[in-house]
Amino acid sequence: MSLDDLRIEREPLSLRGKLVEQLRLAILEGRFAPGERLAESRLCEAFGVSRGLLREAMQQLAAEELVVNIPHRGPVVASIDRRQAEEIYRVRGVLEGLAAEDFTRNATPAQCQRLYDITAELHALADDSRAGERVEVKNRFYETLIQGADNRVVGQFLVQLNNRVSQMRRLSLSVSGRYPETLKEIDRIIDAIKAGDAAAARAAAEDHVRRATEVILAQFPAPSSGDTPDHREEE
Image (cartoon, rainbow, N blue to C red; front, side, top):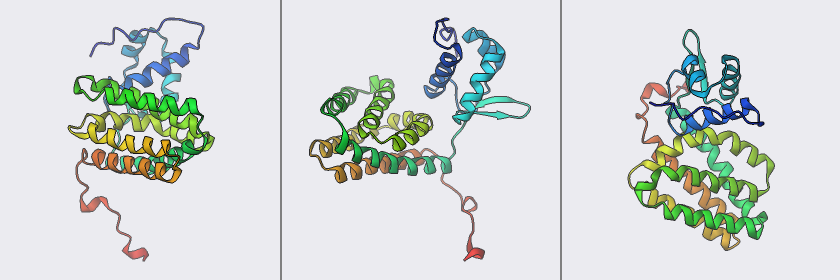
């Protein structure tokens, strides 16, 4: 994999902040695969930064759970297993349902129009040759939903979840036959918002995440009986 285009231009903006941003984006775009070792020497050369600055950036990404430090091996890109995916999507469903409900109640006309425009962009990406653009546009959809919901707590937790969700969203949006269904599910959210039906918007958002969960979990090996804790002695 070529890293020739990763070098950072030195601008007044915090160099550390730009490094974190670039590394995060490279991970979320799949340029660094889950489980891949992030060798310091290679990255320092690729980004044009010092080891000290790189280590600070890695600490930030470790706090975001995108990087894991493994003894005697160093930092590697975090992997997500089936159980983690299920837990993340359960929480995501609740939060996005609340965000859609509050957006319906609180969003300004300008925020609503922006959400409708982004939805039109998603429809324009129905051609699989443009599949790589879908994640970025879908992320903007949720950014707008969060802003219009005007619920700081929901927004804060969704932003924290977004990095892990983005890793899996790329997978779910690339599954054959999934994208047309995704568009239908988003349209149901939009229809409810346009109708001013907050409860229906919440239900549609939760249903969208529930269906996405089924797609994501199908990409993992089925859990064996030994993966489920036995609680009979506690009953």
